Image 1 (cartoon, protein in one colour):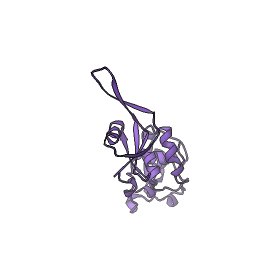
Image 2: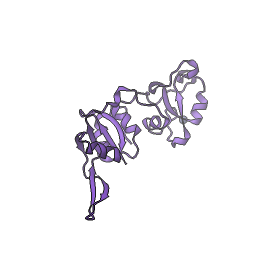
Image 3: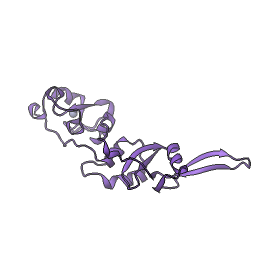
Image 4: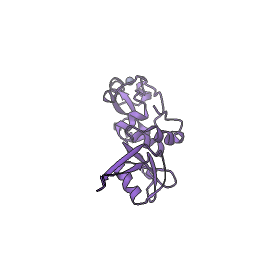
Length: 181
Ligand SMILES: [Zn+2]
């Protein structure tokens, strides 16, 4: 269970766990929140036998939180494959993460960078076929243009088991390049 941490102006900051969110609540650092009543964090039991509990919202805006967009989203295969919806951007086939590879559109050997705008999900067969060539040289046009996720897309791509309440907040802020699946 992950809690979406935002800056007080509503920009994505990080995914945190329930305990970290509870700490921010206890320290009065939460300015506003969304998605109450979803997670109840159980605390200790008092002498009277009453267990304390805390309602941890799905989304919390925390004072002093740093906006995630200050950095370029970390490029991981997991996030990359999710950006490309687990499809090979050369043949269009759908694959599991274990059957996909990170293909450099302009090959690294030709000065291509390991950046969001130069990498796509590719099945092993297409990756091998393309080899150390550009899509033009290989006659393998890309089915979509690779892009750097905006902060909201990056948060979604990094999330695990994103709750509907959290997706509801993030999705309207996606560019039209990313379709949440
Ligand atoms: Zn392919």
